[in-house]
Image (cartoon, rainbow, N blue to C red; front, side):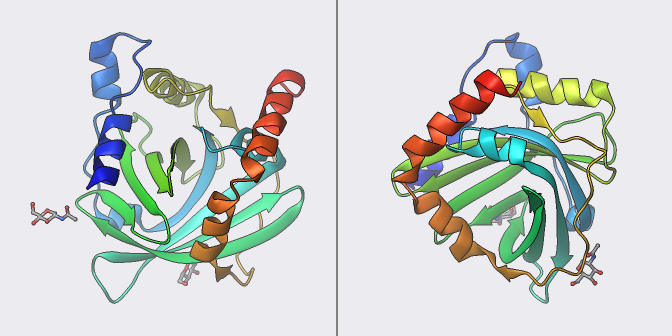
Length: 215
Ligand SMILES: *[C@@H]1O[C@H](CO)[C@@H](O)[C@H](O)[C@H]1NC(C)=O
Ligand SMILES: *[C@@H]1O[C@H](CO)[C@@H](O)[C@H](O)[C@H]1NC(C)=O
C-alpha cells in the first residue's frame, strides 16, 4: 500500500508551467492491449534514475517489441538497445490492465501513458520503487524513428510539469539493432542495476559530467 501512495504522490510533483495545462498534459490516457502491441522505437526521455543521463548519451538507439501471451492481462516485452555500439536484448513479462502496466517484483514498477497529439507515439510515465529508492521516468516511443519537433515540445512541457530535467532525444540517424539478438532474462538484470546502490554516487557524478560537457 505504501508503495502505491508514493507513486501517486509522484504523479502530482512539481508545477513550473501553468496548472491547467499541466493537468491535461499529465492526465493518463486510456489505451488498449492492441494499441500497445508491436514494435516501438525509443525517441527520447528524461529520468531521475542515477546514471540515466549518461546512459541517455551512450544509448544511441533502443526499441521494444511487445507481444500478447496466453494470459490476457500479461504482455511480453523484448527490449533491444545499442549502448556504446553494442547491441543487447532483454525479455520480461509485465501485467497490463486498465491502461496501466505493472511489474510487482523483484522491484515495483508502474507505467501509465500520457496524452500526445502524435498519433503513432507512446508517452510513458513510469514510477519505480526499488527498496527505499523511488525513480521517475518520462519516455517517448514512436512507431517511427523520428518525431516532429512539435511533439517533442509537448514531451518537454510534460517534463517541466513533472519538475524533471529536459528530455534527451536520440539521433534518428543512428543505426538500429537487428531483430535477431537472443534476449536474456530481463527482470533480474534490471533489478541488479537498480540495486547497485553503491554505484549511485558514481552514476550521479557521471550524469553531472555529461550534462556539463556533452551538451
Ligand atoms: C481494472 O478495472 C476493473 C473494472 O473497473 C477492476 O475490477 C479491476 O480491479 C481493475 N484492475 C486493476 C489491476 O486495477
Ligand atoms: C516481435 O516478437 C514476435 C513474437 O516473438 C515476433 O513474431 C516478431 O517477429 C517480433 N517483431 C520484431 C520486430 O522483432
